[in-house]
Image 1 (cartoon, helix red, strand yellow):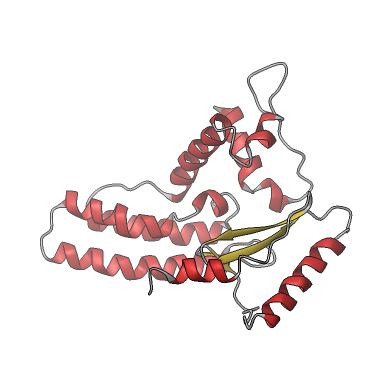
Image 2: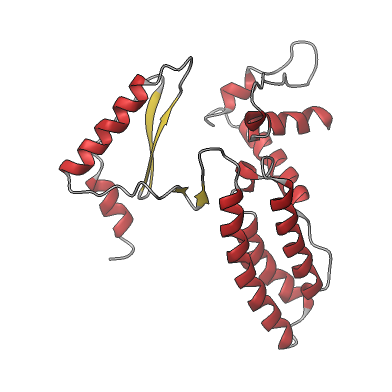
Amino acid sequence: MCVLSPFLFTTYKADFQYHSETCHLQKYSDDTVIVGCVENGQEDEYRDLVESFVSWSRENLLQLNVTKTKFLGVQLDNKLEWSTNTDAVYKKAMSRLYFLRRLRSFSVCSRMLHMFYQSVMASTIFFAAVCWGAGIKAKDANRLNKLIKKAGSVVGCRLANLDEVVRDRMVLKRRTIMENPSHPLHNTVDKLRSSFSSRLLQPRCSKERYRKSFLPSTIRLYNSS
């Protein structure tokens, strides 16, 4: 039953659909996200879609948890500051650091400790780092880097810090986007190609929040390489 639960829930909510040039639904497993492009304060369509979904949920006996701000394991807030997400990541990683230390107490070799770190601890710390890595606050980045350093002392070798992992993953993701015409961001990036060089044009960033997001950050990395 546990295996079927996401499929059954997806089937149950499949009849609520919507798509336009500015608003659409993104569904993945048992998660549903309403996405809207709001320009010049014109958010009527987006708000109407939200209200329609609330009404549909009520009619179909589904209770919306308005306090939940997590999407596919990533904690979100209304300012995209990522501190809440960092707190959650830190707590998970700390519990895994405990098990890493326990393994060392059993005289497990460094190679196996490194494998455990990569598969259990690093996968937690760097989950969706492409999304939040460039926009994270310095104090939050320092917390995670200190945790990585502690893990390195247990494993017995230097481990890549947050900046290094985020940079490498951004480069890889940008390359995937540029080489895959079916990727949702392919056309967006392709339009930024310069006519005079191999560089990409930097998108205009009126907000610091956007400047630190994935696309402007990965373009800066690309142009500096």
